[in-house]
Image (cartoon, rainbow, N blue to C red):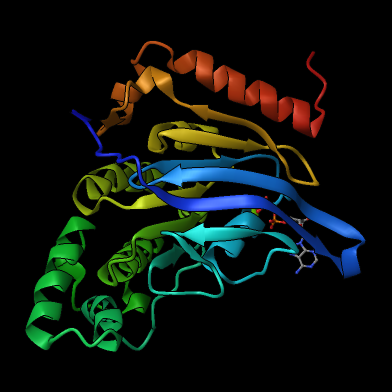
Length: 268
Ligand SMILES: Nc1ncnc2c1ncn2[C@@H]1O[C@H](COP(=O)(O)OP(=O)(O)O)[C@@H](O)[C@H]1O
Ligand SMILES: [Mg+2]
């Protein structure tokens, strides 16, 4: 099935000439990155390991401060973390002493949402991430994939406008990763977020994103910023649908070629 996302023309994330140095300015991790991300877009950050993808995302999250440049989210300059930006990491981030349901409801409790509404939205999200039957289990009773489903539902429960995902499926085996990717396409059809997805997995980026920002090796600069035109503005509920789309293979080959240039592998 093909889904047509609603992408407005409103700028949700603006990164203006952002650089980040460490070691008292001796090491440049990110060099002069500028990009505008539109409300509803899913943008993947791809590039060689250590090129600064996580650093850019952490600056959008407000967990790091740019050395130069600035970042706006929904028109406001980022000055620290906020509930408008939800983060999902590779490591599972649920509270071990709470059940799946309690984990999902926790953030809503902090936001002061009444119990009945918490319960209803929590239940809906548990179903969206296919965790209904494990709602009352503790994280220690769950597989890695199920723990990550809890983390996703927990983040969505706070209803952030922006979802920042850093290698969210990196710790999962290939089959579970695939299930999670297809689940995310379905969830984004319902939840409609602006998403930055950091991933080293080229196929994952092409499958989930509308657009790919490809970084150079250190110091990270934008090498290419490309819309996946072959998808014709659609998202696919199955990976087979993506793979059978004409133009897919060209894009995948292009991404591997860019990666090869950046990591300077010899083509033989
Ligand atoms: N706190 C820090 N101090 C010094 N160097 C750092 C720090 N955080 C990240 N770096 C360096 O910045 C570069 C970019 O890191 P990162 O954004 O994590 O890369 P990626 O996510 O693309 O793999 C790396 O060389 C990393 O070692
Ligand atoms: Mg990283």
